[in-house]
Structures are given as C-alpha cells and as structure tokens.
Length: 542
Ligand SMILES: Cc1cc2nc3c(=O)[nH]c(=O)nc-3n(C[C@H](O)[C@H](O)[C@H](O)COP(=O)(O)OP(=O)(O)OC[C@H]3O[C@@H](n4cnc5c(N)ncnc54)[C@H](O)[C@@H]3O)c2cc1C
Image 1 (cartoon, helix red, strand yellow):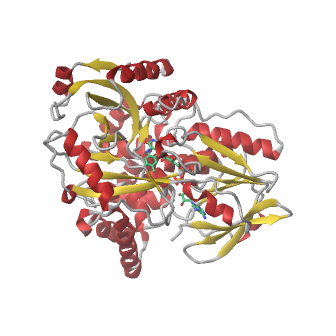
Image 2 (image 1 turned 60 degrees about the vertical axis):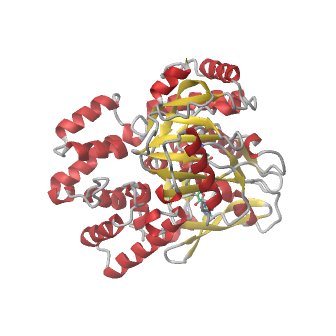
Image 3 (image 1 turned 180 degrees about the vertical axis):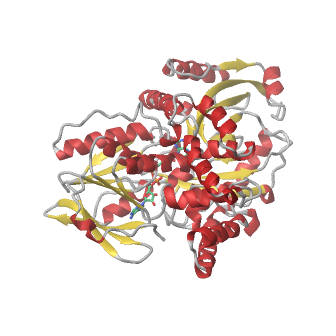
C-alpha cells in the first residue's frame, strides 16, 4: 500500500521525461535528469531495485577480464567510476582485496595475469587503492591457508570495489532524484506506450495495488527496464527488433566454512575455465556466478540444481576443506544480465558496454538503454540524460553527479562522522554501527526517532539487531510499500541467514502497532513475502 495515492491529475502534469524502470540505471538517470532541472516521472512495476540490480555480484570493478576482450575504454570508464563511488558513497562502496590463484592447470598462464594486472594498474593510475602484488606460492598459502596447494604457482593480489548493499545504492539514487523534484512511483507497471503518428507521447500504467490505469505524458520516454526492455517495446503494438539477449547468473549464499578466505577469490573454474568469485559479503560468502543464455519468464528466475552443484563443486575443488553441500546453502540469488542480443558466440564475449538506442525514425520521443554494468551506472545515466536533452532540443546543463555525494554521505569525512555518531547518538555501539553501515549519515534521522520514542530502539530481528524505528523510517521516509520492501530493500533484514523468515512476522507486528496495519494486512503481507522469497530457495523453506 502507498503512503500517498497517485495523483488523479497525473495525466495533466507537464513532465519532460518519463523513465521506465527503477533499477540502478533508471534511478540514476532520474537523479541526474532531476538535478539538471528536468521534470521527471520514474515508474517501476515493483519496488526500487527489485530487478537485476539486486542480484549482481555486487562488485564495483574495472572488469579485469574485459581486458582479454580488448574493451580498454570500458575498463578505464569502470575504474574511473569506482573512484567516484569510493568518494561519493563511502558508506556503501568500499575497497575489497582480491586474490587470483595461479595454477598450472589454468588457461591463462601467470605471465598473462601479470600483464593484465599491469594494464589494470595503468588504467587506474588515479586510484586510491594500492597497486597489485604478485605472491609466491608460500605467500599465497600464508594468506589463504585453505587454497588447494596442488599445482599452485602463486597468486596475484589486487583491489577492486564492493557494494554490499546494492539495494541501498539504488534507493539513495531514488531518494536524491525525489529530493530534486522527481516523482517516483513504485508498483506502477507500464502497460503500453502512448503513440500518435509514430511519436511516443507517454505511457499508460497500472497501479498494482488498485488495478487502476493512469496515463502520463512527456516529450521523451526512457526505457531503462533492464532485461524487460523488449517487453516494453512490445507495448508499442508493433513488431520490433530484438534488442536484449539476457544471460542468467546465479549466486549461492553460505556461512563461513573451513578454509574460507579473508580476501575475495577470483578463480578459474576447474571444469570449464570460467571465472568464478568467492566473495566475503555481509559476514557470509557470496559464490558465483553462472552465465547461461535465458529466454524464460523474466519474473520467475531461480537458480537451478545444476548451477548450485557447479558452484559448490568448484568451491570444494579450490578449497578442499570447505566440503560444502547443498544443505549448507542458506539461499541463492539469481538475475538476468541485460545484455545486447547476440545470436551466437560465447556469453562471456558479449560486450558489457551500454548502448543508448534512439528509436528514431521508427518512433520519435523514445530511447532505450541496452546493457550496462552496476559499476558504470553513473556514466550510463549521464550519457542517457545527455541524449534526452538532445531529443528535447535543449542545451544541457552540466552533469554534476561525479562530485555530489549520495544522501547517506552528507559529510566531508565519513570516518569522522561515524566516530561522532557512535559517541553522540545515544544508541548502543552495535546499533549505531549497524545504522551507519546501512543508512550512512541518514542514521541521525533514525536516532532522532528513537530519542522521541525510546521503545523504537527495540530489535525485531535477533540476528541483525535491526530496530523497530527502521521499519517506520522505511515506510515514512524511504518509499517502502510492502513488507518485502521493508525487509529486502530498506532494513536489509531479508539478507540474514534465514532470508528474513521469522523476522517477517515481528516486522509485521511493528507495522501493525505503529503504522496501522490490520490483522488481515499483516497476514497478507507475510504470505506475500514468503511466496516472493521462494525464488531464493532458502534452506528454511526447503
Ligand atoms: C549474476 C549477475 C552478476 C552481476 N555482477 C555485476 C557486478 O558484480 N558488477 C557490475 O557492475 N555489474 C554486475 N552485473 C550487471 C548489473 O547487475 C546490471 O547490468 C544492472 O544491475 C542492470 O540494471 P538496470 O537498472 O538496467 O536493470 P534492472 O535492475 O533489472 O532494473 C529494471 C527495472 O525495470 C522494471 N520494469 C520492468 N518492466 C517494467 C514495466 N512494464 N513497468 C515499469 N517497470 C518495469 C523492473 O521491475 C526493474 O526494477 C551482474 C548481473 C548479473 C545478472
């Protein structure tokens, strides 16, 4: 349910730009466009960050392996964006050390990795993290005692970035867009494009809570719906070319295991030479990913048994003490990479560059975004908004997103802010640390709520220590509409070992007490949440 209804008169509002899709690329485009003075309507059929952006490996990386495909400009752009994110979102995007073990069985010999590392260092000449290091076999095993020593010739160690809570990065972009005047409507599904004389005038969308249809108009519509781009184009009522060729990628989430690494491991799979990551994440490990062409239902993607077996087998081979079995998988994440359609060839070779497609002359007033990485979202948004201004026939104001911090990084020194907050928030250290990790400088607002109503300091999830105030904050200040929004994309409790099971009931009780949810709504929300998370295959529900 929404806090505020969709305005009846939305069809009369003079938007400059309608954006379809509130994944990372849609929210960032909305933010940039709103900052440059455009009147923006951002629509998503579900919540902010409920598509691919929530199911990535959560790396803000240059993409070492793109060097192999000679995508030098993409690597440079990614490394530059990584630095912007370290600076503008220090609470969410942090350096992470990686180790690439070098085995005599590997397809890529050590000299090739060394050359790649040198190239990576050169392309990130302006970086804030250290250069790479080559490690001897002994030093490698000293650092990663669990690695299989057989055939180990050493390792390369380097730094990249990680956004543990990609959902929050999306949300903060959406909040910033809203603060700059954008209208953000979630659970608003675009059903068709309004077309007159081959000109896209706007969209017809459905409020998924009421089933009511609305129309909104703007001279430009930006289709940035990730893997769903072609579905939106079907809403033109014409047969259009196929643009998207999504590939499915799955991750396993497991607890600490014997031999688990302190660094992220970037390994070459024994069975097929594919790259696989074992990544420390939120006190657990994210193991992934697969890369399989996918033509199925985009709303029902799940990791399958073969993917789970493959990732477990490869982990157990490189870390023999791990002994991971399917019952040790807490849950899985699975998403579809929104890649440009390519009829044949290896999935790894499909470019990760983004394309801003102008549909002129077929349709005027319509742009679609194809491809893109989480890492390069800001640059993608800048390019998309430049293209929007071009279509509007207006001179574009300067893009400012390279140097304006995210809402949760509203300080010149985040470390100093963190120390100040811990000393002055009046909250126990565990709670203040948790709040800083999730909300950054916006934690002060939750502390203020607790200061007014001290009982809101009580926890509703014993594992994460999440407090009641966060639920109110999610709904009243962060556009959460459902229990799923609260757990999976605001408080992040849905990423705990049980995928939020158990905490879901506690959270619904808090919503009943403080937000007026009825008994019926509580039951419906819990049932909907449990149905939704079945896609993660949580061990608790197996
Ligand atoms: C397994 C995997 C691992 C990855 N790892 C990384 C990584 O480590 N680093 C990296 O940089 N990139 C990574 N990526 C790529 C990255 O995640 C994606 O490129 C990026 O998240 C795409 O964002 P998006 O906003 O374009 O699409 P999405 O996040 O999918 O957003 C599209 C939105 O459009 C909405 N939508 C769809 N249809 C409609 C409609 N009819 N009306 C309204 N809204 C609609 C959806 O609900 C969705 O919210 C990975 C991807 C995958 C799948």
